[in-house]
Length: 277
Image (cartoon, rainbow, N blue to C red):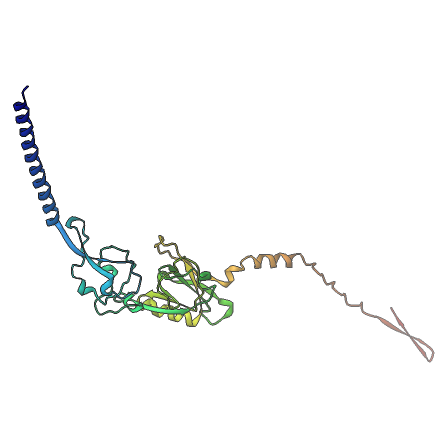
């Protein structure tokens, strides 16, 4: 094969390679343009946002995501979020959604975490009532009350008045301890309905309340029978009867009346003798 043919083949291969390169470039640019056209710009967090925090300009930014992967309700204008409170923890680069933010003009902190038609009620606690300090913000509890409905100490009863209640704050903290350690606080704030707010207030003033910590995955409400004081000592009566039955029985003897006394008078001249038998 002469040099001219080799040169021609090389030149032809170069042209084919150039054509294929151009076609591949156009194809990739077309795909990129299609991807960019299908992306949507939404608001995401620039850092981890904590519960109760008020959003500032530096806390959020715009980012592009495929339109098919964006959840419903995502925000597209950062300015409408400035000043709104965070009511659920938000991770860095997470898309901001309405269910994790307080309503506009609702402020930040604890008030922003109270949904419409709900109330926050605080009750005094100690280490025992607060389950040794493990009742932290975000946990759920049952509320038990012990008292005397008839003002009779012998008729003391314990009953569950509220179930599956969310703890909003422990003391002045609205976030759980980062290490999950128990904390001693003087008050616990619970999220309840207006009707339950009345029940909780009455229970805390009329009786002695106790919080019962629930599992985070246990949301089932059950009907619990109240426990009366007398039921704690239900074995006392039989034991008492048994003790009484072992006591010796004292039988009183019947005292017979003395037999009647008969007397006979015997006259001997002027002398009179009386004989009794």
